[in-house]
Image 1 (cartoon, rainbow, N blue to C red):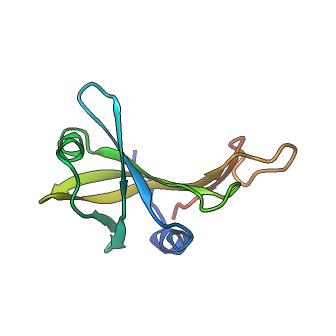
Image 2: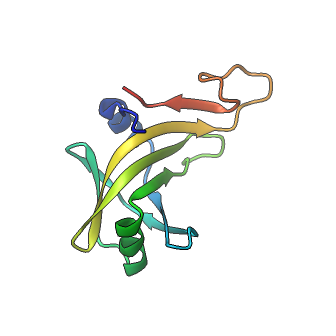
Length: 123
């Protein structure tokens, strides 16, 4: 199921992050993770040149995840699920879901009630 991602909220959130990790899976369903510099344009993330394993994984299993770690301890991690398409030697990823996530502070109420401090970036 696809969840509409609010691209304005997503673009605003991206300003707090520098690089991301792209997580793909192979035919054996083992995770393959690489550092990337995604660029959001026209509703999709463009990712420049990636390796053969990443391209092969994305072609066979287009459900991928991008993870931007927080700049500071205790900050939010930006997690985006998407659908990948191989474009030459890179990828284009259309977001299908996005959330800002961090562990909850004990005893503090959370925005989403998920048990952690989650802020969905849905439209």
